[in-house]
Length: 435
Ligand code: CMC
Image (cartoon, rainbow, N blue to C red; front, side, top):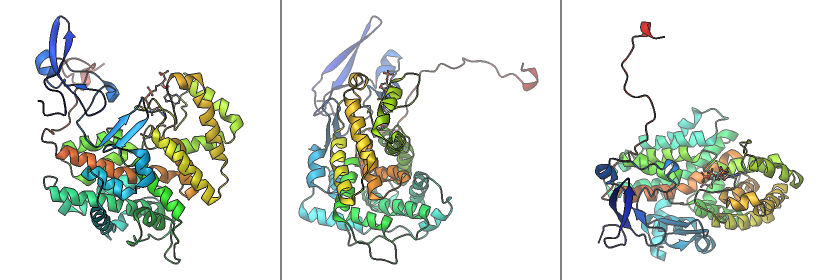
C-alpha cells in the first residue's frame, strides 16, 4: 500500500513517443485521483508543463475539499453551510487546525488561549506611524504581519511543535488587532486595545468602530454576520495565497513571514482583492438600466473588463459561499436599514448574467466576493478594508496548511521547473564592441 491515501499499487500508463511509463496513481478520499509524475524527469528526461496549475495537485492535504462542479465546500469534511449556520469562527479555527470539532472543554480552552494573545507588542504601534495616512491597509498589513517575526522569536522555531502552535494562536489572535489598527490609522482615530471579554468578531468590531471616549455597544446581528463572513473565508484549499504560504514555508521561513507572503498574494484583484473591485464595479454601474452595457463589455474579447465577483478557477457552479453571503447581506441590510441600491443592482446583475449564454457556456457564477462587498459596506467598512478582512479570516487556513506542510515527513522545498525559451549559450561581448 502506498503512503498516500488509498490505492494499492494502482498505476497509470503514460505513452510518450513509443515508450510507456508506468506512473503510480493515488486515490483521495473524495475527488479525482492523481498521477505521480515526480520520477518522470529521472525516467523520461521530461518536465510536465501546467502554467497556472490547472491540472496539478501540489500537495497531499486533509484540510479542505472543494467539488467545483457540484458547488461543494467542506472543511475537514463538514459542509460550509452547516458550519456557517451552527458554528462560530473560533470553532472553525479549531476544526481547521486540529482536524476535529472541539468538545465544550476544548472549545473553552481554545477560546481562552486565543483571547489571551490578542494584544500586540506595544512597540508595534510605532510601525504604523511610518506609513502614509493614505496607505492602502493591505500594504500596512503586509508590513506589520511580516514585522511580527521581529517581535516573537520565541515562536519562530518551526522545528518545535509547541512553538508552531503558539505562532498559530498568535496569528489568529493578533490579526484582528493589527487589521483594526490599520483601519484606525487611516482615519486618524486612536488605536483601541482588544477587550477580552468579548467574542472574536465582536471584539474586532469594537476595535474598528469603538472610540476610547465612549462605550461601544455590540450589535448582535452585525457581530453574527461578521463571524459568519470569517467562517466563509477561513480556508479554500490550494488557492494562490495558500500556495504562496506553502511555498514560502517550504524553505523553512518563519510563520509570520509566510503569512505576510500570503497577504501580499491575496491582495491582487483576481484573488482576494476582487471584493473591493466588485463593489467598485457595482458603484460604477450605479443603476440596473446600465447593466446590459457592462454585461456586453464583459463579453467583448477586445475589452479587458470582467464582471468582478464572477467566475472561479475551481467552481463551475454557484460558489456555495456566495449563497450564504447573499443571505447574510440581506440580514445586514435589514438590520442597518441601509437602503442600498447596490444590492438591487447586484441582484439584477446576477439574474441577467445567470441567464446569459456567455456566462452559462463558460460556467461563470457569482463567487463569494460578489456579495461580500455590499455586506461589508453596510456594516461601515470602507472598500479598502475588504481584502484586509479576507486576510484576517484566511489566516487560520494559511496557518493550518502551513502546519500540515511542515508536519508532512515527505515535505521538501518547493522548486518548480520551467520550459526555457530564451537565448541559448552565447559569449560575452565587451561593451565597446556591441552594436
Ligand atoms: N467576466 C467575464 N468573463 C470572464 C470572467 C468574468 N468575471 N471570468 C472568466 N471569464 C472568461 C474569460 O475571459 C475566459 O474566456 P475565454 O475562454 O473566451 O478566453 C473564460 O471565462 C475562462 O476564464 P479564465 O480567466 O481562463 O479562468 P481562470 O480560472 O483562470 O480565472 C478568475 C478565474 C476568478 C481569475 C476569473 O474568473 C476572474 O478574473 N474573475 C473576476 C475576478 C474575481 O471575481 N475573483 C475572485 C475569485 S473568488 C475569491 C478568491 O478565491 O479569491
